Image (cartoon, rainbow, N blue to C red):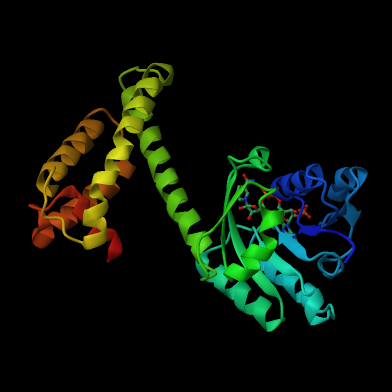
Length: 290
Ligand code: NDP
């Protein structure tokens, strides 16, 4: 091997990863489908490889950060054509965002090609890479993780979350699903208040403070979530249904269709129809589990 680490894919994220590795004094080989994007890194001392296979043969740790799973599988086919001795097998670290099932398929394909593999999920934007606030989760063989960890810690705060290859992805996607539904709810709130001429500048500070203060109360539901016992009642589902129904009705009266809230309304109404109206609102989770 000629470099400490190889990076496949120099989009916004791959470039940030390669820059952070160079900043930390590592020797880096890069590959990108569109070669022009390698130029700034080459100017900083990176070696440019003409193919993924050449990049993979150059370093003990090979980081892929491509657009999607299919791009990784295509690169892996190329990498598999390199004939390396068992001692020279690089660790493939896939930081491409994929589903858990895709991460498992990459792990299987890597194993069939005799390659060691870790799946990673980057919970940060490119400007955060190389700093402690960039959290990156990894799943896969813990011994492989331990071997790659000194390199991976350069990219951000790296954490191994389990041996099963899909675990980093599912944790990442669970958090992102909460983020997207929360933001959709925030947008809906701004639109609803806007129907009365209230500006975003007026509402958003109050909205962010209120939701920020409410979110930590999820902690009190943890025992109910993990046990499935929702009989210790704070606010029951009938109360929540009535509250949600009122807000939906108010929004329509003001000429706004609150489609995020109507999705919640359907879930709550469904649980009440199942005879669960007397249970705590934490019982909504059972609808999402079915
Ligand atoms: P970009 O769109 O900036 O870059 C995409 C990269 O994928 C480029 O290197 C591109 O090459 C390559 N690529 C696209 N299609 C192909 C193909 N058919 N064959 C080979 N290479 C291909 O995306 P990002 O860098 O932002 O994202 C990369 C990954 O990182 C994604 O999975 C994303 O979800 C993940 N990620 C990104 C975050 C972000 O904030 N940007 C945050 C967390 C994760 P080319 O230059 O030739 O087009």
